[in-house]
Length: 347
Ligand SMILES: NC(=O)c1ccc[n+]([C@@H]2O[C@H](COP(=O)([O-])OP(=O)(O)OC[C@H]3O[C@@H](n4cnc5c(N)ncnc54)[C@H](OP(=O)(O)O)[C@@H]3O)[C@@H](O)[C@H]2O)c1
Image (tube, rainbow, N blue to C red; front, side, top):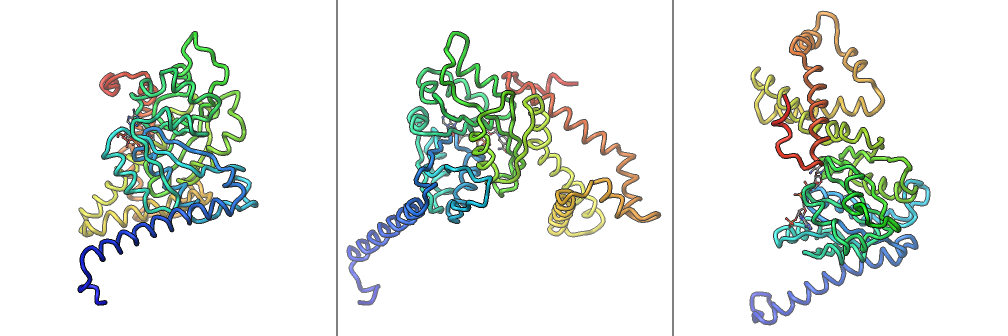
């Protein structure tokens, strides 16, 4: 029968059936991957409390890996024995829930969006990522139900400016026994997580967290870019370098492009050219070249590059950028204390 001759109820019924089959197929595919892998059969449940921009990017990175079916790569020593296979994303509002479904709904790996259900979603989880804004930490964590739900589990915090000692004192204030306390690992990713180009720094306190927890955390953040470790006392500097660094780099890209636009290069070309130029030098440095060597190699005597470099030195670019990192470090160190307008207190 020609499609435009079918009665509406037949067409609607057929569309509903088609939609049901698509849903069934999507879940079947996800289950097939689970059934086919011993590691994934023993999978972990991961809950993100406060699944905003960054939480969604982290889940997207994990889903991309799981959907690609690479979970059985025994040669990869960096892959933990047990991977997360069940995922809860916790938020409060309908708009956040809708955003998560839209952004993560196209992966084969299903996502359970939970609204105002942090404690139950934590109870059912093995690993919890805390991704809310720093000011919400006490209200989310500071109660007996959450403390009990977290018992013996791994809690990964991505909150800027909040050290693990502060999270620990919210969960276990004096007088509250610490038996069975959760393991807290602090991670500082950055905005490029959305394109899997984050530079994430993990804090490694002394004594260090259990090796399996550190391995799993490293694996999770490797889904969204590179991962390094630093002791807790350097996490504010890491926040400034890797968290604020993208904004500083954006200013540099803008500045390169501005000069080019001043000299007549069309705007639509200038920003892309400047960004690719920065990416190219990043690639050389990440490939092992010291930036001073890379700079020197392109600075011919009497040439245009050295002429420009002299102007950068006159303007004190290095001192200014270094001071910006130092300043951001100091401000970051005060953010977790809940101080308002920390910048306003700086000279
Ligand atoms: N974005 C970055 O580049 C970046 C880099 C490094 C570190 N961080 C840190 O990462 C954290 C998240 O940043 P973000 O940019 O992803 O923030 P965001 O997009 O604002 O996400 C925060 C999420 O938390 C949810 N939320 C708030 N209160 C909640 C509650 N009581 N229970 C459950 N969910 C709740 C919000 O949803 P509702 O509004 O629906 O409640 C929202 O989806 C921050 O602590 C930030 O310091 C961010």
